Length: 149
Image (cartoon, rainbow, N blue to C red; front, side, top):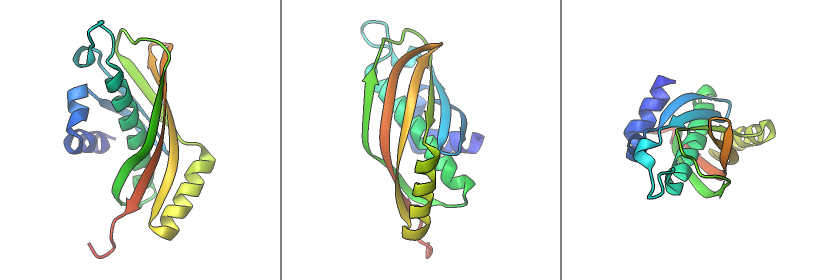
């Protein structure tokens, strides 16, 4: 887990600026925490763009962990489409929980193994304590590493 969290912080500099901390990642899902302090907006609540970025990073972490657990190194993982639904302002630190359905995971892995690339939908929920403040959805694309590299 520490390796994946370190990878995200080193490869995606915005993650460190957000205060992103990966707590767990497996089976196409992940859990992370982000502090309010570096993400304050002019109203003293979480900046909406930071909520989106933290959610997208958490979904990314779940996909990367899935590929690593299956022994499938990916050259590229990108979000092709994403949207967020803001439900309430976050006035404190947040926790993000993401997941992909078991059916989506099976279909993605099959496609990735046969075609060297795959697409998967991952959803996340963003909480401040027990309060649900946002929901995020993303379509992620992954491409296998070239066997010759």
